[in-house]
Image 1 (cartoon, helix red, strand yellow):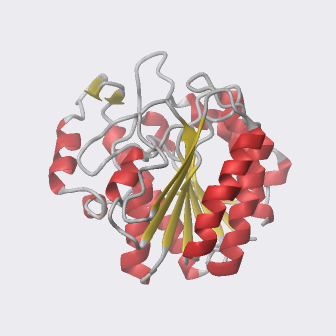
Image 2: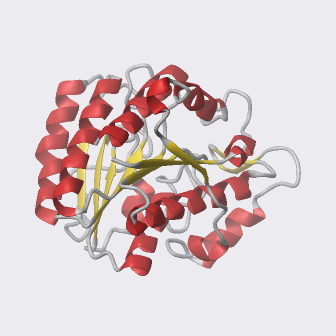
Length: 308
């Protein structure tokens, strides 16, 4: 397998208040993990900055303008309850979008089989009209729309294993049967969505997990709900909202996964992609707030993408 990682120093310039969990140290921890010799074959590219037109693939112009108006000239300001912006935050968010789109281009051009985008701020909580949950714009929704518009992809599957439900992605694709959205997450937990009864146009598949459950429950939910839905849908392309806050060390949730669980889930999605999607997978970093848990889990995920 050929894997590309997209990164950019601008992601470290998105500043948040002291003690905020979504901090630059997250990417620094991942970069340290990637220094291991097993990652020497990994191709690493600088993510390009996306433009405002890409935002409009998934959001109305008013949302874009609202976010832009909240970017401070200095210091740190709150966009909403827990989502903060600093002077470089808009550039970082647009570069996250640019990296996601570049990753899609890489797999559809044959440059790579799969790609991982190590960006921040994350995206999966951003709804059509609302920044929330540390997220400005919904990077994965924009990547899906780009794949549809540029490459004519008919069936996009988005798999979200962040411990928090991807309410924004669900909101954007709620009534769009061309996109299958599958999520495994802790419930109850922020943002309060993600019940099994939330099914959209039959394209939304939620697999909520109770607090204090671990690997066995996660794997069973993944097999029985997500993999079954993927088999029925037969996607042409798979996107992963790769949050690693279901790791047992994470301070923001109570699911007890280990790094090997993300290796296992990645392998199952590689199997699906090999059958129906010409191996095409793009994975975007979402949550993960314990630095050791994030580095171990994301590193394991990336290495599994490289091994196929």
